[in-house]
Length: 358
Ligand code: NAI
Ligand code: MG
Image 1 (cartoon, helix red, strand yellow):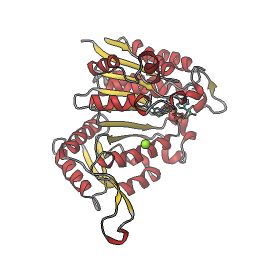
Image 2 (cartoon, helix red, strand yellow; image 1 turned 45 degrees about the vertical axis):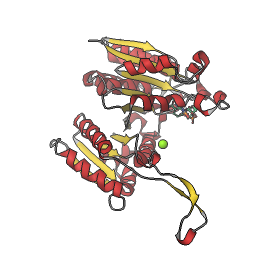
Image 3 (cartoon, rainbow, N blue to C red; image 1 turned 90 degrees about the horizontal axis):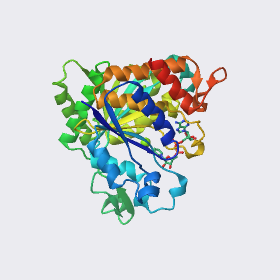
Image 4 (cartoon, rainbow, N blue to C red; image 1 turned 90 degrees about the vertical axis):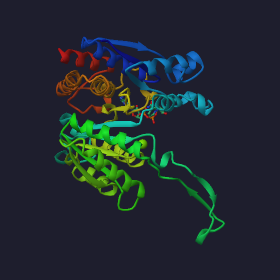
């Protein structure tokens, strides 16, 4: 059976880095059907919309989407609904992507890039799983109003609603346990159950779902403590599952532990196991078309695609191992270069990964 992959390169460095990930996928000799379509500013230029119907249909019909990045300062004056970034929001919404997976891996050769001491982070390999569709970002009512009563009567107050429905918690919890199963079978659920009603429900449901995964060790942590532990002893974690707000903050914190934005992949999944896979960074227009961009975050996103949407974990391992080999050879793009390394370009990194696969 052949797997359909929608390839959406986008803007800036998107096409260069996606081209390398595509070459790596092709080098595996798997039955993959790769189909490319424009997205973001490139799609606006070609079809007048950042997410044209044909691109959306291709993404919906595919088993997975490999996405580069969108955006460029030259589109800043466009109305909001035509800006490149709307494509990502549109894809998330149309595909029902509710689970955001962000691994934070610190390769031994890049330990110098971390904000922490090598003895604290060397060998770090954790996965942060963030719920994407609920929580205080989308809860209603929300707004700015005149304070109804109390000490601030008559003055303006802003308010948002933190809200999670049971099925929303249940489905992200399942992804948490399933991801832990694919790794070291340890899941830490992060909440603020000592203060928040939403978090108490969150905790109850995670505990309930845990009964279906007796082989996974579940722990709970308050978010303030989790923020501390991530910089004190990050290697104590394996998989962290948390809500939209806490996950937004913790995943950025974890990204900084690795220090190199060009190395971080991500995945967003829906209930059918379809997923959108993209590097965590943006379109980096400052270095576009100069063969300078680091393609490894995108190549590692392709590995996640094989693992989470196509169930080809052994092939995903092969790619990740090849990336380790290339780093061990001392080959680096400028973003992770240190004196003594060999400075190479985007395409040469792709060549080296393909060579290492053999
Ligand atoms: P950015 O991540 O594109 O760039 C930040 C800095 O990191 C730049 O100096 C860039 O050169 C560098 N960088 C990023 N990726 C790199 C790579 N693979 N290799 C080497 N260096 C790399 O973030 P910025 O500058 O804030 O945004 C640029 C554009 O990207 C904006 O239009 C923004 O809206 C868009 N963006 C798109 C995202 C997406 O498509 N999912 C996510 C974030 C930003
Ligand atoms: Mg954020």
